[in-house]
Structure formats: C-alpha cells, structure tokens
Length: 111
Image 1 (cartoon, one colour):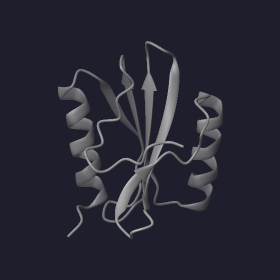
Image 2 (cartoon, helix red, strand yellow):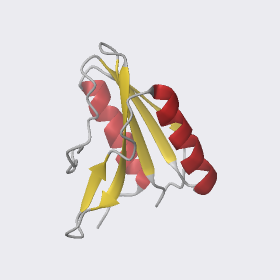
Image 3 (cartoon, helix red, strand yellow):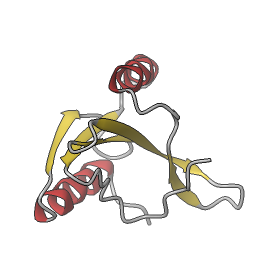
Image 4 (cartoon, helix red, strand yellow):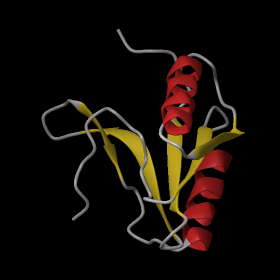
C-alpha cells in the first residue's frame, strides 16, 4: 500500500528539517493521490534539480530527473507546465548546502 501524498510530503519535509535543510510546500495538490515534484536547490553550488515519481522498465516505482537542466528558470518553467496539466500536483522545494533531495525511495541515476 502506498502512502497518501500529504503524508509522504510531510515526512519528506520533516526528513529535510532533521537533516539541517529548509523545506517548504510551494504547491498543495490532492491529499490522497497527487503527483509530487521535488525541487532540490544546492545553496553552495547555486544549482537546482527536479525529481518526480515514475515507473522503471521493470514496473517498479522510482524517482527520476525529468529535466536535465540545472537552471532554476528552466526547472520552474517545467513545473508551471506540469501544474497547468495536473491541478492535483504537489511541489516541494528543499534548500540544502549539499543539494540533497531527502527522497528515501529508489532514485534513478541521471544519464
């Protein structure tokens, strides 16, 4: 059984805070089944990355980087396009000196 989106997001924010990062929910979506996008901003390197949930080739859930860019404006443009398409979308922004995303599930390596 999967966790509801609001519970998963709350746990992510808490993990980030415990790790010394700042995390905030920028956009709240459907509490039960909204898609989540995590924007991890590395304050030391001044770069950002996006993560969103997807299905791997084996059918297992994993987190991917849907945009190869580290430019915050390009990532924000992607989020805006997704928000127009999916009104149930959640967006969580995490600011961390090491750029950590605090996602505990499987994260695909960027290619």
